[in-house]
Amino acid sequence: MDPSRNFEAYRLSKVNQLLTNISLEMGRSDFEFRSLTDGATIPPDNISSGESEAVALAAEILYFFDTGNPPIFAGAWS
Image: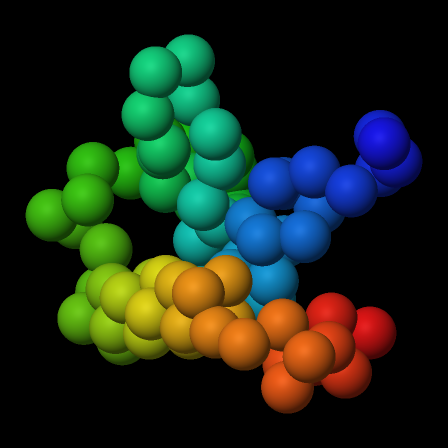
């Protein structure tokens, strides 16, 4: 098992590439939104509608690829 292939490297980093003002981080028991300017935790109800939409779409796309036909999507992991 390759230790560099983990949830943060292969999933969370891709979601964060879509976000311009915040990042989605793994907390102790849940995910947290953090400001890219000062690292402060941001409550989910305080993120913008665009950021909320980007997170929702990213989750749907990742689910689609994770549950799809692996031979068809093999090139998508490269």
